[in-house]
Length: 153
Image (cartoon, helix red, strand yellow):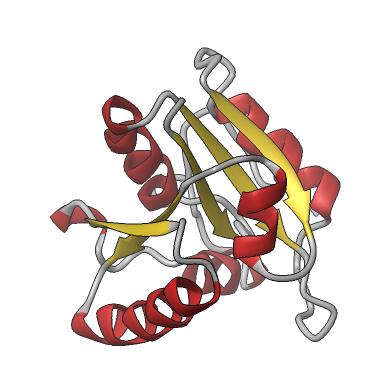
């Protein structure tokens, strides 16, 4: 089985995340959207909210799972028997950042490949950080998040 892990904080999930996962579905038998818990990072939305939103967005897709994890992504991949890490690239800065992480992951775990997909052009400016800032300041974020979710604090 070709299983991929799509790691991130998803604070919150965006249309860019949704698009990437749906476009990656033909490549893998199963995709695990893995919400990483980083003790040094402060999240705006609760873990329970993020999990519920992701489950709602992908409820029609039995081959998409949602899990939480702590620690190294490659260790999580080994625990769930995933041979691939899925990452999205919006800009050249994303590429440089992700390339470095992918190369270190490859040194640590030679059995896990990182697969990069380019973000759909119309979604390049959408980031969770921007969505949080717009939301925090009372703006309408509906064009940036999947249609099936509604942000609440």
